[in-house]
Length: 157
Image (cartoon, rainbow, N blue to C red):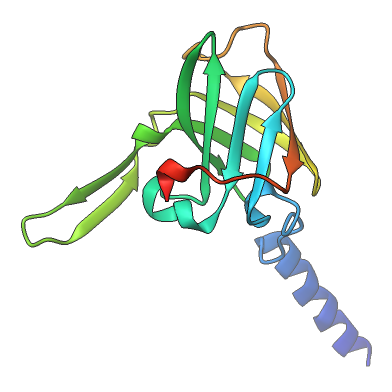
Protein backbone atom coordinates (compact mmCIF):
# COMPACT_ATOMS: atom_id res chain seq x y z
CA UNK A 1 0.00 0.00 0.00
CA UNK A 2 2.87 2.39 0.83
CA UNK A 3 4.46 1.64 -2.52
CA UNK A 4 1.22 2.44 -4.34
CA UNK A 5 0.89 5.72 -2.43
CA UNK A 6 4.51 6.61 -3.25
CA UNK A 7 3.95 5.95 -6.95
CA UNK A 8 0.78 8.05 -6.92
CA UNK A 9 2.60 10.94 -5.20
CA UNK A 10 5.51 10.73 -7.64
CA UNK A 11 3.17 10.83 -10.65
CA UNK A 12 1.24 13.76 -9.14
CA UNK A 13 4.44 15.73 -8.53
CA UNK A 14 5.64 14.97 -12.07
CA UNK A 15 2.36 16.21 -13.60
CA UNK A 16 2.45 19.40 -11.53
CA UNK A 17 6.06 20.15 -12.42
CA UNK A 18 5.75 19.28 -16.11
CA UNK A 19 3.03 21.82 -16.75
CA UNK A 20 0.32 19.28 -17.48
CA UNK A 21 -1.84 20.98 -14.87
CA UNK A 22 -2.92 24.49 -15.87
CA UNK A 23 -3.77 26.35 -12.68
CA UNK A 24 -4.89 29.40 -14.64
CA UNK A 25 -7.42 27.57 -16.81
CA UNK A 26 -10.72 29.46 -16.80
CA UNK A 27 -9.25 32.54 -15.12
CA UNK A 28 -7.37 34.05 -18.08
CA UNK A 29 -9.34 36.47 -20.23
CA UNK A 30 -8.71 34.25 -23.29
CA UNK A 31 -10.55 31.42 -21.52
CA UNK A 32 -13.69 33.55 -21.22
CA UNK A 33 -15.41 33.61 -24.58
CA UNK A 34 -17.55 36.59 -25.65
CA UNK A 35 -16.14 39.08 -23.18
CA UNK A 36 -14.69 42.56 -23.46
CA UNK A 37 -11.87 43.75 -21.23
CA UNK A 38 -11.75 47.54 -20.75
CA UNK A 39 -8.77 49.44 -19.35
CA UNK A 40 -9.08 51.99 -16.54
CA UNK A 41 -5.80 53.88 -17.08
CA UNK A 42 -5.95 54.47 -20.85
CA UNK A 43 -8.59 54.33 -23.58
CA UNK A 44 -8.14 50.67 -24.48
CA UNK A 45 -10.05 47.42 -24.68
CA UNK A 46 -9.83 43.96 -26.16
CA UNK A 47 -12.50 41.39 -26.92
CA UNK A 48 -12.33 37.62 -26.72
CA UNK A 49 -14.31 35.88 -29.43
CA UNK A 50 -13.51 32.72 -31.40
CA UNK A 51 -14.79 34.41 -34.58
CA UNK A 52 -11.67 36.62 -34.59
CA UNK A 53 -9.28 33.67 -34.93
CA UNK A 54 -9.12 33.71 -38.74
CA UNK A 55 -8.57 37.47 -38.77
CA UNK A 56 -6.11 37.93 -35.91
CA UNK A 57 -4.59 34.48 -35.37
CA UNK A 58 -5.95 34.58 -31.82
CA UNK A 59 -9.38 34.89 -30.30
CA UNK A 60 -8.61 38.50 -29.37
CA UNK A 61 -9.08 41.86 -31.02
CA UNK A 62 -8.90 45.29 -29.45
CA UNK A 63 -8.04 48.92 -29.80
CA UNK A 64 -5.78 51.32 -27.96
CA UNK A 65 -6.46 55.04 -28.40
CA UNK A 66 -3.48 57.17 -27.43
CA UNK A 67 -3.79 60.89 -28.13
CA UNK A 68 -6.42 60.28 -30.81
CA UNK A 69 -4.36 57.64 -32.63
CA UNK A 70 -6.18 54.30 -32.67
CA UNK A 71 -4.07 51.16 -32.89
CA UNK A 72 -5.83 47.85 -33.55
CA UNK A 73 -4.27 45.16 -31.36
CA UNK A 74 -3.96 41.46 -30.76
CA UNK A 75 -3.40 40.27 -27.20
CA UNK A 76 -1.37 37.14 -26.46
CA UNK A 77 -1.56 35.62 -23.01
CA UNK A 78 0.75 32.68 -22.45
CA UNK A 79 -0.03 29.76 -20.15
CA UNK A 80 1.84 31.46 -17.33
CA UNK A 81 1.55 35.13 -16.58
CA UNK A 82 3.13 36.68 -19.69
CA UNK A 83 1.15 39.04 -21.90
CA UNK A 84 2.09 40.69 -25.20
CA UNK A 85 0.23 43.42 -27.07
CA UNK A 86 0.86 43.43 -30.82
CA UNK A 87 -0.54 45.52 -33.67
CA UNK A 88 -3.03 43.61 -35.79
CA UNK A 89 -0.58 44.00 -38.70
CA UNK A 90 1.74 41.54 -36.92
CA UNK A 91 -0.57 38.72 -38.03
CA UNK A 92 0.37 37.76 -41.58
CA UNK A 93 -1.35 35.39 -43.98
CA UNK A 94 0.63 34.44 -47.07
CA UNK A 95 -0.83 32.51 -49.98
CA UNK A 96 1.63 30.39 -51.91
CA UNK A 97 1.56 29.71 -55.64
CA UNK A 98 -0.31 26.45 -55.07
CA UNK A 99 -3.05 28.36 -53.20
CA UNK A 100 -2.24 27.09 -49.72
CA UNK A 101 -2.29 29.53 -46.83
CA UNK A 102 0.44 30.04 -44.30
CA UNK A 103 -0.40 32.20 -41.31
CA UNK A 104 2.02 33.41 -38.68
CA UNK A 105 2.61 36.25 -36.26
CA UNK A 106 5.72 38.40 -36.48
CA UNK A 107 6.83 38.06 -32.87
CA UNK A 108 9.24 41.00 -32.98
CA UNK A 109 6.44 43.38 -34.00
CA UNK A 110 5.12 43.86 -30.45
CA UNK A 111 3.97 47.12 -28.86
CA UNK A 112 4.66 46.32 -25.21
CA UNK A 113 5.09 43.26 -22.99
CA UNK A 114 4.09 42.63 -19.41
CA UNK A 115 3.34 40.22 -16.63
CA UNK A 116 -0.17 39.86 -15.39
CA UNK A 117 -2.26 38.85 -12.44
CA UNK A 118 -5.84 37.95 -13.10
CA UNK A 119 -9.02 36.47 -11.82
CA UNK A 120 -12.29 35.93 -13.65
CA UNK A 121 -13.20 39.63 -13.61
CA UNK A 122 -9.95 41.58 -13.55
CA UNK A 123 -6.61 41.60 -15.36
CA UNK A 124 -3.73 43.66 -13.99
CA UNK A 125 -0.80 44.08 -16.38
CA UNK A 126 2.57 45.22 -15.06
CA UNK A 127 4.43 46.60 -18.07
CA UNK A 128 8.06 45.46 -18.03
CA UNK A 129 9.11 46.00 -21.63
CA UNK A 130 8.09 49.27 -23.25
CA UNK A 131 11.41 49.85 -25.02
CA UNK A 132 9.56 50.78 -28.23
CA UNK A 133 7.93 53.59 -26.22
CA UNK A 134 4.41 52.79 -27.42
CA UNK A 135 3.06 53.75 -23.98
CA UNK A 136 3.99 56.79 -21.97
CA UNK A 137 6.88 56.00 -19.64
CA UNK A 138 4.66 56.97 -16.68
CA UNK A 139 2.38 53.97 -17.36
CA UNK A 140 3.63 51.04 -15.35
CA UNK A 141 0.34 49.21 -14.69
CA UNK A 142 -2.82 48.68 -16.72
CA UNK A 143 -6.01 47.34 -15.13
CA UNK A 144 -8.62 45.71 -17.36
CA UNK A 145 -12.06 44.75 -16.07
CA UNK A 146 -14.45 42.31 -17.71
CA UNK A 147 -17.58 43.52 -19.48
CA UNK A 148 -19.89 40.68 -20.46
CA UNK A 149 -22.65 42.53 -22.30
CA UNK A 150 -21.08 44.26 -25.28
CA UNK A 151 -21.44 44.45 -29.05
CA UNK A 152 -18.62 42.72 -30.95
CA UNK A 153 -16.84 44.77 -33.60
CA UNK A 154 -18.92 44.68 -36.79
CA UNK A 155 -15.96 45.29 -39.08
CA UNK A 156 -14.29 42.03 -38.13
CA UNK A 157 -17.21 39.71 -38.81
